[in-house]
Image (cartoon, helix red, strand yellow):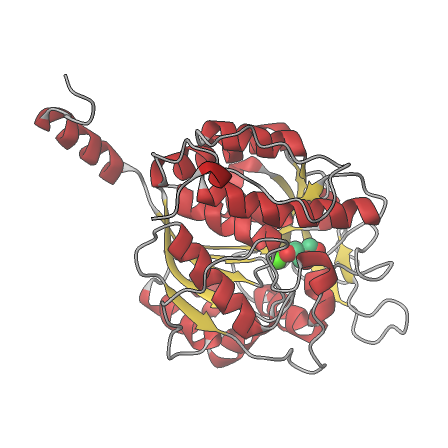
Length: 374
Ligand code: BDR
Ligand code: CA
């Protein structure tokens, strides 16, 4: 049989199997962001993930840049139309602080993605949350990998929102663990502590508790250059993808596969950042991990707790405080992820994103610098 000539019965069986995959409908809220980028790639790579809409939240970079990054990744992944909404330009109360030193001038490290011709939605990110949650009541799974600004605005507009969602997964906070922005405070919460409090308070009254993936666990999700090499290999990209700690920061990927090439350039920046902050030549993949939990909560063991956010502390503002023992006399409003298997997570990530990149660009076996421009 000639390559590519699949018998009709096989095609029908394949499509039937594809359709029979249980899909998870997701509302995704990101501040893209290097690790947010991989969270998006991971979800796009998963047949069981159906992204209903993407909220672009100001955080790592301003909201407009987050939206531009989201649209550009959708293009690179040849994704069908997915609505991308722009969020509030500022947190609820305080001015916006961004972190280009962590995520690069445009939020995607050293990567430079072609600007997309896709356009952003005419509705706000908060309205997107409200509308999609109402239209998909009891079905939609929320995932937030940035500050909680737009979800807080949505909760204010629709107080039933916590009960409308099937599940919510939040990347944020630090419990019994040092912060990464101040000694006590994690970045996503620190950007908009008031919003975080609105969201945690709202879930105090709801039946469903969000799963919180905090630094305690997400800092065990450490991507190494070898993970990137294996992902590239799985995509069929050439030459071998070798990010070296000794490389000058001007070195760029020559990967033949465009997804691998851009992701590698993005993550190289993140590894340099972690190295420069004495964390080793690795990159913590907070957000892809939260994305994986949104699809499969079985990846983590959780513990219930009542979570509140410190707003008044002069040294501890933005700290997430967990009452594990009911000392406040308030019902638990969160399930804090406390155990996982990082190696198993990376195996799945490499397999799914690598295979996806290979499917998207099947002919990309020739190293990038040897390709002729047409
Ligand atoms: C979180 O902060 C951001 O910089 C990352 O994208 C992640 O969502 C980790 O603290
Ligand atoms: Ca993020």
